[in-house]
Amino acid sequence: MIPVATNLQVDDRLIVRALKLGGHKTKKAAVTQALVEYINHLQQQKILSMFGTVNYDPKYDYKKQRART
Image 1 (cartoon, one colour):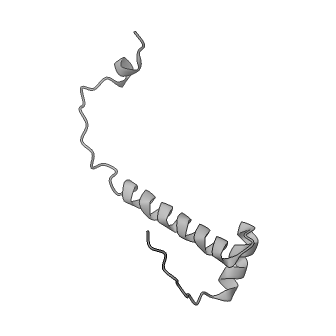
Image 2 (image 1 turned 90 degrees about the vertical axis):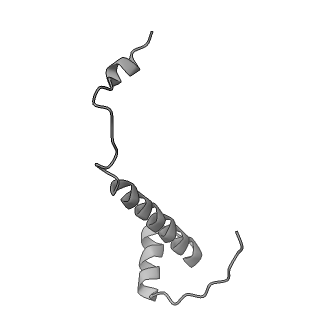
Image 3 (image 1 turned 135 degrees about the vertical axis):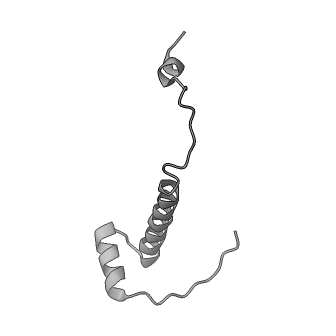
């Protein structure tokens, strides 16, 4: 990954709230955490959009699979 310098103008009220609620010591930590959570949320939405689209074998016996021999 190539580091890229970024200058953002973020609403100061949002940063202050994020710092307080998240217990972050720096603006960078608060923004980084927000981005991580945003990415996780988007990935979860992507997974949820697949709900009901996966084909399964109706003959599959999950109880048999779990049984120890």
